Image 1 (cartoon, rainbow, N blue to C red):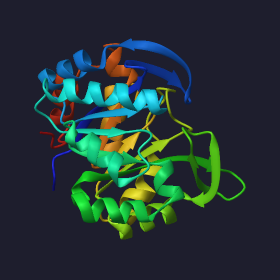
Image 2 (cartoon, rainbow, N blue to C red):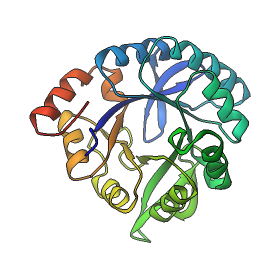
Image 3 (tube, rainbow, N blue to C red):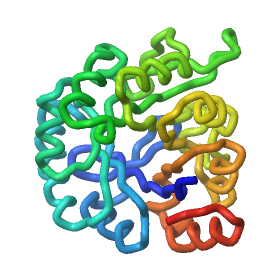
Length: 252
C-alpha cells in the first residue's frame, strides 16, 4: 500500500494566498513562495497552487510565482487555474511545476485530458472536481467556474471518464464541506476512491488531526489536502504525520 500524502493547498489571487469558506469571503493568508518553502521544510509531501484570479494578468503573475517557488522547494507541486490548452500546461511545467490541475477546461473539453496525458504523461495531469450533493438526485453534481456553475453531470461518472481519458490523479473537493472545518466529506470520498483506479486527493473540510485519519481510513483517500488549518497554524504538518503514524496510518 502506498504511503498517504499530506498536501497543503495555496489558493493564489494576484500573487497572494487567500482563504474563504464555501468558496467565498476571501481573506489574505500570506506569501505563496514563503508558505510553500515553510511546508517543504515541515515535511509536506506536495504543494498545490490554485490560481483563483486566472485572468490574463493572473496567469502572468502565477508563472512568476511558480518559477520562484520551484527554486525554493524540493517536493512536487501542482498548479491549476485558468489552464485551458496544452500550451498553458507547457508554460506552467516549464516554469517548474510538476503537475497541472484542470477543472472547468476539462469539463468543457474532455479531450484536453487526453492531449495533456499524451504530451506530458498521465502523471502530470490532475483532474480537479468540485462536487456538491444534489438532494433531488441523491448523488453528487459537478460544478465548474470556481464552484459557481452547476453542470448537470454526476461526479462519479465524470471522474471515471476523466480516468479513461488519461488523468493520473483526481483532486476531489467537496463544496459542501469546503472551509467548514467539520471534517472531509467521507461519503463522497469513499464512493469515488472505491470506484476508480487512480489516486484520489480528498479536499474540503479539514478542521483537526482526526479528520485526516478518518478520510484515509473510512474515506479511503490516497492523499488529503487542506489550507486554512495549515495557513493559520491550527495544525502543523510534523504533528499531523506523527499522529497518523501513531494511529497506524502509513505516511512518508
